[in-house]
Length: 120
Image (cartoon, rainbow, N blue to C red; front, side):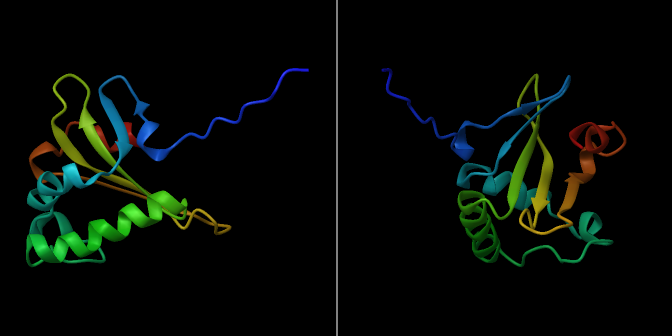
């Protein structure tokens, strides 16, 4: 009798691709680019303000890493497929709820190119 093997897919293994984009779980290596992109103009209609400092943002993104690991929330980095340019973030929030939430934001300098729609 053959022994069955269980393969566990880790978040670090995930990549979601589209014609122009790659989405993968946020890592600490993405923090600098994300911090720069979170501007007052970007967050004007969002439920949060830009973080006051990189240290303040570190508190936020470290929490994201924990929720990615436990599967309760997923924060994905959106990058252009051709050159890996940082475009924004997408989040699948409250995955255990009856009505999870999807959120997407694209860096202001990349608006108007359909990246947000494509990421969804």
